[in-house]
Length: 79
Image 1: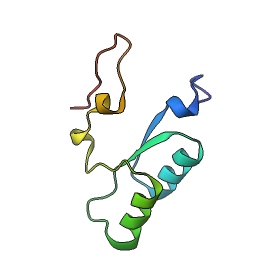
Image 2 (image 1 turned 30 degrees about the vertical axis):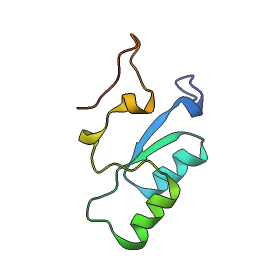
Image 3 (image 1 turned 180 degrees about the horizontal axis):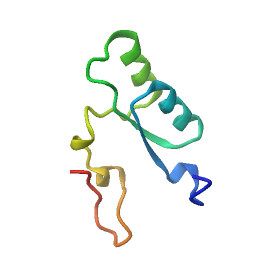
């Protein structure tokens, strides 16, 4: 965020590792966790405790639902 000149609370991180999710959250960034689909048990619970935003894959995300838009004000989607 600093290198881009953007406030951390205006950033959105995508993470597949719990350590990355924790780092993003501690930096006050929004974070979408995309854990390995084989993950279960304690590790999956740890993801859910760290961020409420969990996706099964990037394909299911519509970033406009999070209020993200491109420079022209159009909703952003990764599909």
